Length: 221
Image (cartoon, rainbow, N blue to C red):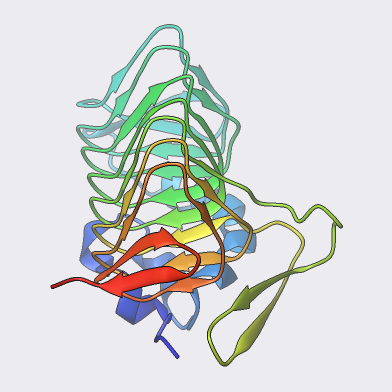
């Protein structure tokens, strides 16, 4: 069984939202709290660094936002982040320092830690992406089960009841997801792990592993 606690997945020094995770053990527990947290945090952000661009939308002055991007609040875009052409932020999103939200990428109810890259045709919903994690072109998080039952997280010998109807993926720091992969509801990927392109992933992938397919998950050498 893997340790999928917040402290084992994420470096909280690499997000403006560190306080959001305080007193919580598993990362999916923060998902219902993102909306209110952004509004509260946004009102405390220093005006010399951030500008309020709309209702509950705060953008760092050093961030780059394409004029074709569609931004909905609550939203915080941190320093040096880049929101590219035709990105669609549906709301409840924190985009970390130096992060990239790319062409036609859609975000909804997410925390992107610093230096995260979702640069090409990605859907990221109800998910937490750790420091320097990267989703290849066309890779997505699926956040609702087809039978609409509550999402569970399945590890090798344990099942975690999340109590959530919507939960995408929890990516630890430095995770690499290959192009055109689908991360099914309740996926948790440990730090420094890789997912092969065109994969269909579910359950828990341990840290420092390579997901080749559901029957071949190997430790990095």
